[in-house]
Image 1 (spheres, rainbow, N blue to C red):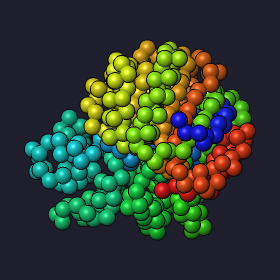
Image 2: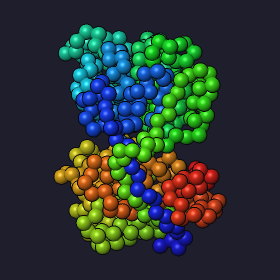
Image 3: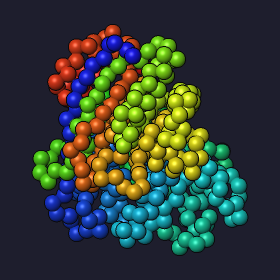
Image 4: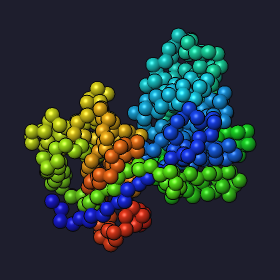
Length: 437
């Protein structure tokens, strides 16, 4: 075990429920205040930034904006293909509940390739353009000129808006992406790489310069962990006259609902030796399982190889029946089994929009403990937000446990100065000053 460690208790988190829903959102039932705030602010705002914590319904918050222009098309940009599938299902449910006329289509590269070639040929760009022009062209069961919600990823969005498709299609596709959508939702945009982020910011600038905001376009940005560079860019847009609203789901102090338990967090330096680290992880998991066999936990690491090797170590300890893996290459059936295991081993696949659902539903948090590594600040806060979620649960007072392994440089540069009684705010402020890769 590493001798150098810090322990800090992160206080419980709550989020405000909505006391009274506007008539347009009555179908949502028990909505949260930040969801209603997104809807209300978007009436007279160009860009809406929703900063609600992970797992508190930011997807539905963004989709409420559709109610202002119910007969116009939208695009939803999700950062991973796994999330495209999940958000497509969420959008379909929202459209059905809200009685909107839209057709919802997922548009990963694999999805587009699977669309029929019968009427428009086999080129992906040709298919995508025709679906945006008139969905009935590719999907004959759809009414003519029905509005569409296209759920895609940042790469396809970038290729479309930067004229990177086949030369026969690039102009048509770019024109469609720049002019077709009245609502544009960027989900978890802090995870975009530099190219994808440039694509998003250019689209915002294009919308401002060519007066699409004046014509009613709404852009919704969803993230629990905004990066300073994006904050600066938004400030520049604001100075240029773009109307921007920031919504923080935890800002209110009325009608509070518990959203996350207190978390007893232990910070450890990541050992230089992979073998030493994996042995330490395995010993920690085995100890927790044997001391508290009724609790559920997870280990989230960036490396698939580390997850597989950890799985082997736990198998040698006789825990095969209790361990499940959720990784990019894992088939959907294996992921579904893994979610019911007491010990879940996962890669960054679970970082965004992933819910550790259990059946039957637990009365308390689905994850009692979490062990994870963090390659940067965003990953740290995303992952710590996975443990102890209790929104909608009947038992919300049981503390959760977490161990975070941080890079050695963080310890050399001042992590040991952490005031361990300061809670989340002090930890956040200190992490902002430390070097991450």
